[in-house]
Each structure stands twice: as C-alpha cells, then as structure tokens.
Image: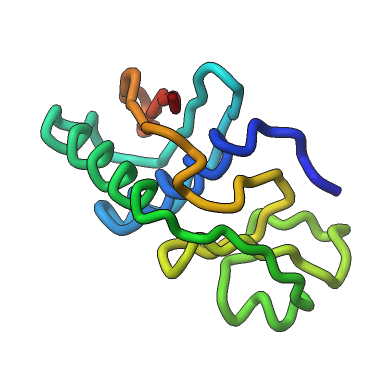
Length: 144
C-alpha cells in the first residue's frame, strides 16, 4: 500500500535523511510530517544546529537534487532487504515483500510512499527553520 505524500516533498525528505546520516551519523528521522507546502523531520540529537550547518545541509541536499539522479523502486523479500537496509520501522505484519526506494547511489531505504522519477523534479530545497528541545532536533523545510 502506498502512502499519499507529495512526491517532490517525500523524495526531498529521503535526501535530507541521508544527508543528516552522512553529516552527523545519528540516524534517519524518527518522525516526519510531509505536506505539500512545508514539511518537518525530527531527529534524536544533542543540540541545535549552527547556521553554518544549516546552510551546509541545504547546499548538500540541493547538490544531490541538481545531479538529476534516477529514483527507482525494487521489491525484495524481507530476508534480501535486511542485507541492505534497516527494517526496524517496518511493521511486523507488512508481509514478506519489501519495497525499496533508491535515489541514485546516494540513498536506499524501505518506503511505501510516492516519489518523483528523478531528483531534478524536486525543485529547490529550503530549510525554513530548525529547533531543538528535549533531545529532539526538528527541521522544517519546503521545496519550490
């Protein structure tokens, strides 16, 4: 079953998540709210981001978007998928087949949402604001 998210925004979320993993090694977001006008991702973190870090995240995400990477899907058994991706967020009753979304060679993860076919379709990524409270870093963003 596919979740109904705006494909551009949802694809941007995947790129943001991988960028956060690569920059800070603290994992993907544990909570996300994806909408057409603006979205947010929450990360387990130990502090607020600096202005330079926020700008660097934006730059890195937009660089990936501008690379015009193909976004593809594969269907693997749980056992096969477990070799490549974390299945910890996958519900126990999700079945034996796992849908895997790949963004070029940049990101790979299980997902049931809609995506664009190429990163170039996303548009410009912009961080609207960030906030930190009680061990949670929230990043609010939009695409245009």
